[in-house]
Length: 389
Figure (cartoon, rainbow, N blue to C red):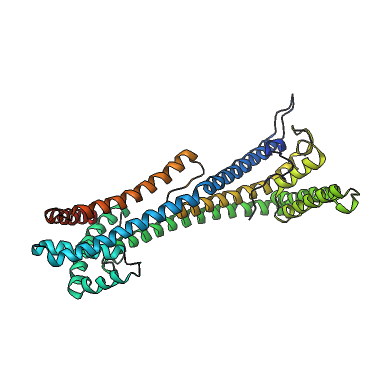
């Protein structure tokens, strides 16, 4: 994968310096404009990657630590609620319906704490996840799953495949997401197949026409020209930077470092880095009146093939970076978003997690009173019912 093209540390040459500048009387040709546009895309994508990495480096550790602390606090409050509710279920004067609500809430708390290996939690699993309670919970889950199924099928615009296999809202939602993803993938594959077919047909027509005329296809010639151009630049740099030809020790070390960058860029077909190194070595002026400006359009078109590959690689790098950071930070991360907005997203999710822990602590304080306990059980039952509806 092509890395973000970066200027050497001792030469701050931007990609704009490599662009072809219009003359006093001669506007840019389409080939020159395309070359400049690709350089601009590379500079924009490289800048987005660098800024996003710098932003994440500033915030990642503190954010993840804050989320971890808040989650641990919330889990501690859930365990305290679980133990208190278990004790009150044995001693409080609750109706049959209230006892059922309490057992449902206990099972919910046990589910939230199921990932822990806490012996007190595991002991209560054996008490409340009995066959009778499990059946009661399964019936409630199945009813909620069927209600969710209707909403999913309405959104999909078609029946859910094999709905009888899914007995909980979580299973039903996961099945709906898988079916939606298959629909999207099938649509994309159909579109891609059509594009590939059209492209293959056009290429076949061009090759057939060229073969009839005894010509080599233009695309193939440009690919050869691109490889030839990058090889020429590499050879020029290798000749200019050969360390063995430099008598000065300090200069020889500098050239050795630059030559290492040249080799790495050449291996990756990183044209922009090679061009910047060439400008640095030849001490070109800020406005590029030499170099690319003197190239014929055919050479620029050939080089644009390499630049287009770099653009695609950078787009892929940026997409992977955004997805990775979104998973790590638990918020949508996009390079196009304002940094202040991204930082506010982190603050909001941290606040949400702290609020969850604070709410659990407030609930625990509230239900110390038996009358409040009964009201709280009814509220929790209604909330669970509304959430699964």
